[in-house]
Length: 484
Image (cartoon, rainbow, N blue to C red):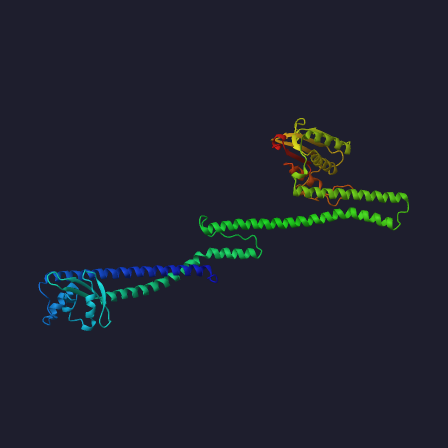
């Protein structure tokens, strides 16, 4: 059964049910018709026996009279009982009448007549020559001690039933063929949307993830629901594949950047060691300088490794890296102003409220002070590294819309929209071609800052435009909101 298509299986099931229905209907109709004919004939036989048993005052004649058969035949046909038999008290045949059109061999055998019950119950008898059936009814005579038996052949009734069954069989077979053919085309038309879904699925399996199932039926139908569900699933699959491809691309870029960042200090360390081993550092000062370079590159390598480890830990379990205590962001803002002045004494640094409006405001949070200090240090270092010396910087702190805010805004060259969209990516640097100093950022500072902020339930946002400076904004839940 599973070898057949859905269309063939549905058609076969429908044909079987139709055949069963037609067969059952034909059987019921033929049975009811047969029952009706028998009841009608039984009624005629009972009426005949009742009439004769009450009307006869003497014993019946000994034999069927041969005079005037046309009158006798008409009378018997009128009552629908072409055969009447008289039985004596001992059950022997004492006389009888039958239509002249009936041959004696086609009548019921005489020895079977006494088996007919005398209570008016109709029974079936076979003809003496086995040519057909008879229906017989017997009743005791009211005025003499015998029995009156009336019988009629079932040949006509059996022929009618046989003709009905033949007609039902032929018409049922023709109807079954016609309905099967109509069902084949109807099922083909009804299953056409499923074939289109199949073709769409095949195209998607070949790699075309942009394909969608067309609208094949109203949304309230089964096909409509199926198409909508498949399109939703296909959209999720396409996004999942796109996300996986983007993740793989980011992973390749990440591995490439890590390899590049690790290779530079390792080459420096290896080069200094090879110079020492080759005897190219004869003087003590040369050895000291080589050891200084090795220490500097090892420090840079250690810092890079720690940054990568921190990012991995923040990705896996961000909340587990925090030791929260109540604090105020104004403390970090004041320290950040001192750090900027230490890095560039000639740089104007102002401390204001959020957006530069008013004095600094309270910003109580429940946070890990050491981690937030790392965030602010990265933001301040970014402003100092990517703006010309002496560029004014504003540090704003306070509360905005129920959130604690700390801003680091500069009046430097700003960033383009494309640069701003990638500035928080790992190992991304705005100017990759510039010559970096030995302690230059590897492109992880802002990524770490955002990861730490999100671990606190906040974020780091950027507002910038080319030529209009940049404003990095750290937002965190207030102390009352973060405590629960």
